[in-house]
Image (cartoon, rainbow, N blue to C red; front, side, top):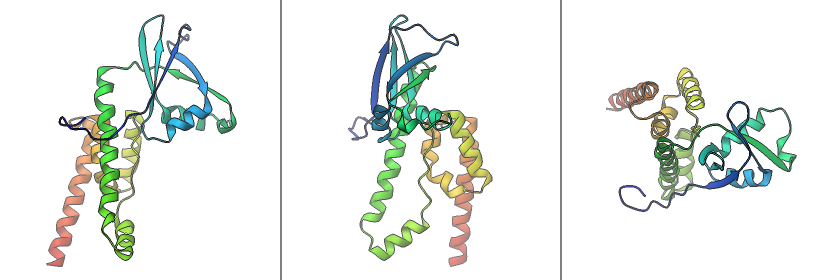
Length: 201
């Protein structure tokens, strides 16, 4: 729901539970079928929620974060039958606030991208696609999102950052210091547009 209206944006969640004791580092290990991870990865920003019975607590981890862990693990995890993932982060009210914001921002960006092409001829659509910034998938983890934002800014990808402004704002918070880079990118894009208008006139 957004502003009291249904959005048709969905959050895909897989609930797991265990009575096992916590690991020495305080994390909670949950195993599952690799096919289940593939199933969740079909939808962006899908999450696992793990219920720890002894403590009555809930932990959360994104499907993409688990896939990233195995991608960097060195083994070919795509042929494994089962996977085990540690859960550290507790499911907090703050997490429940900003995760839907990120999912809605991603869905709106996808919708706008599709609708902007619907009424175009094949020629105009091809020009539009080539001139449009690529869709940036912003990670849910603030550390990874910060690394991506820094790399994009250092490569002068102002248009790409500007097009993903709402996604970064959902992860960091609109008034976070991390958003300074996004605001600078917005300013650069605005300045470039004004220069183009001046030159055209």
